[in-house]
Structures are given as C-alpha cells and as structure tokens.
Length: 223
Image 1: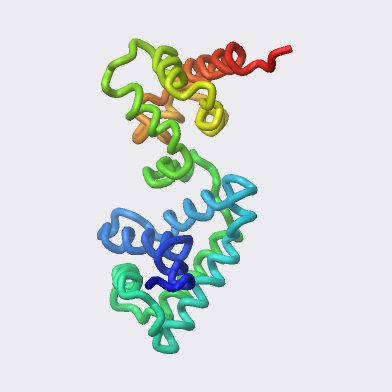
Image 2: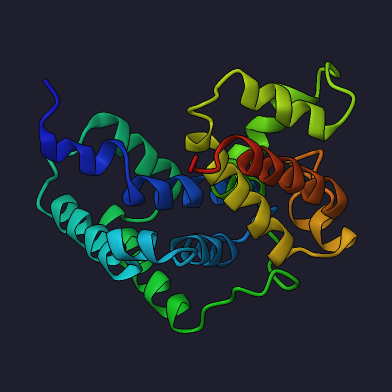
C-alpha cells in the first residue's frame, strides 16, 4: 500500500524539478540546468492559480525537506524516487545536491526571466501550457478529414453540444493566450509551432472566430 505521504515523491513539483535535472544531465551538455529551472519558474508564475497553489518558495522547502530525509537515512523514500535522484545528481551527494537545487531555484526566482525572445518556450512547456491546442490538432486536423479549421471546430463541437462549453472555454483561452504572447508569424513559429504544428496567427484567429460564432449561435440565453 502506498502511503499518502509517498505522493510527495511519486508526483508533484519535487519530481518535476528532478525530472528536469535528470534530463539536463543526460543531455550531455545540450541542455542547461539554469535555463530549464527558469522555464519551470516561469511556468509556475503563468497564472495566479498555479502560484497560489504551489509557489516556488514551497517547492524549495520541499526540496530541502527531502534533502533532510536523505541525510537521516531516507527509509521512507520510494525506490523509484531514489533512482530518479541518482539520475539527477550523478556522483554528487544526494543531500547536498537537493539543497543546492533549492538554493539555485531561490536565486533564479529573484531574477526571473519571462522574455520569450530570450527564453523561447521548450517542448515540455508547450505541452503543459497549451495541451488543448495540441490535442485539437491531433484529434481534428492532422488526418485531413476537415477542409478548414472552422469545419474542424464545427465537427468538434457537434459531438459535444450542449456540453461543449466545458472544453471550448480552456481551448479558447489557450488560443487567445497564444495570440497575445506571439502575435507575429515568426514569434509563433519559434515558440509554439514546433509542437502545435497548425499554429499560425491566422489559423489561431480562424479557430477563435469559429468558437465565438458557435457560442453566439448555440449558447445565447433564451428570452
């Protein structure tokens, strides 16, 4: 049986940070740890909700807490988490590595970088921040069943109506965010199109127009 406290290691921000650190180490110099941690910090500050639920200061405290558990023997730490920590820390002492990682996050948050020209979105950021746009492409566009994005939106909403507002709302919010952050062709190409292949400013506007048209036509309160 998995104890409730084991969730600290199985999922959540500590595991996310260690996943990033392990990926950087295994990239053999292709990736930079500070860069990926800056992206993690930026993602956490994306909305007030994420920052309210788990601010970076809390993530740092959790890393320091796990470091203390390691120093005390760490009998309650699951084997899978130990393996991940080994991948992330390499030959470094686990306790020292976790404390150093928390300290690095603290320092980087003091000088946050949210400029997408300097720090473009990475693939993992896009998948976390724009999952609905990513899924819309795979589910409704890439197989070529629909002649236009408008047709794809109509087919998508037809299967869910009248409950389509539940998924259209976050999808439309992602689309509007993409347009606000990356209004130009090149900006969107560099920051979004590597994962959301259909994303261009024109396509995203067409998507939003189709969503808004559906909402005006099908979801206006009746007198």
